[in-house]
Image 1 (tube, rainbow, N blue to C red):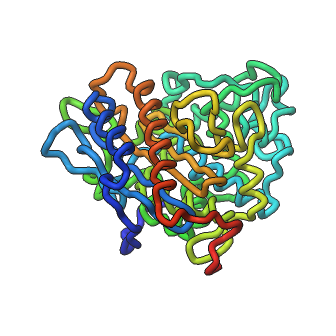
Image 2: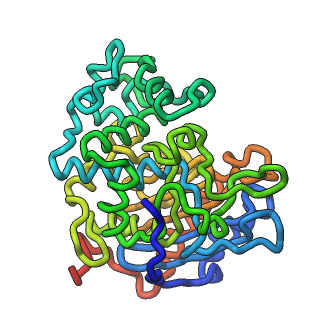
Length: 384
C-alpha cells in the first residue's frame, strides 16, 4: 500500500520533563552509543500521555531530530503483529481462516514429513516445529526461489512440542493471508486495517519522497541508507513479507495500540476486530506466547520492565523497535530506535532490552503520577 499524504491528526503531546525516568533511560541509551535517536509514545485507550523524540536520526549533531508524528521507522518483526497478525484476525472474524485447520488447507505447496499436522494456530504461537532462522537469501536470488525454499524446509520437531520463535512462521502467515484474501498482504492490510484505523503513515516499501524522514538502518560507502527494508528475506520478497518490511511512525502505532485496548474499536467507534478475537490473540497460548504476540516475561526486567501486569503482551523488532500493551492498566509503551544504524555500543541489543524495561517502568510511574488517577473502564470509551 502506498503511503498516504493526508493531513495528520495530531495527538496530544507532553515533553519528557514530565517523565524524568523515561527521559534518563533514553538519553542514557544515546550517550552509551546504543542508538543515535529514538521516539517514545506512552498512552491509554483514549489519551496520549507522552510523545517525544530524542537525539538524531544519525550520529551527526546536525541530523534531523526524530518526530513521533512523521519519522518513519523500519519496524522489522513488529510487522508480524501490526500487519500480519491483524490481517489473520480479520480473516478469522470473517470465517475465511480457521485457527485449527492445517496450513496445507491454505498453502498446498507446504509439503514435507509431518507438515500435514501444522495448523495456523501453531504458526501464530511459534510451535510449528520449524527452525528459528535459515539464511535462504544466500541461495534465493528472487522471491519465487525463496518461497520454494521456505515451503520445503523440514520440521525440526513435531508441532506443538515446544516454542521456537521463527521468521518462517511469519512468512507463511503472510502467504496464507494472500491466498485467502486474493490480495497482496500490503494491499489487504492497508485497506482493511491501516486506513480505517487512521494509520495514514503506515505501509510497506516507502516511496523515495519519504526516505528523508525515515530513520536509516545502515551505511553504504559513508552514506546513511534509509527507506529500504533491513531484513534480507523481506528485501528478496520485494519489501512485502509477513515477518518484516513494515514502516510506521510512533503516533500511528499508538493508534493501533489504542484499537486493541478498546477491544477492537477505532477512534470513530467502528468495530475493526471482534472483541473476543482480540482477547483470544492477546492472552497466553503457549510457553510465554499469545497468538502472534509475546507475553511479558515476569522473570526479567528486560523489554517490558517489572511494573506492567502479567497480562501485558507485545513484540520487539531487530532494528530496535518495540510495542507493549497492558490491558489491565490500560497502558501502552512504544519505543522506536534505529539500533542497527552504526551502533557505538557493544552488544547493543542487550543494552536496548534493559533500556526498554526502564522506559516501561517509567510509563507505569507516569500513569500513577497523574492527578486525579485515571479510573480503568471496561469496554470501549463512553462516547462509543
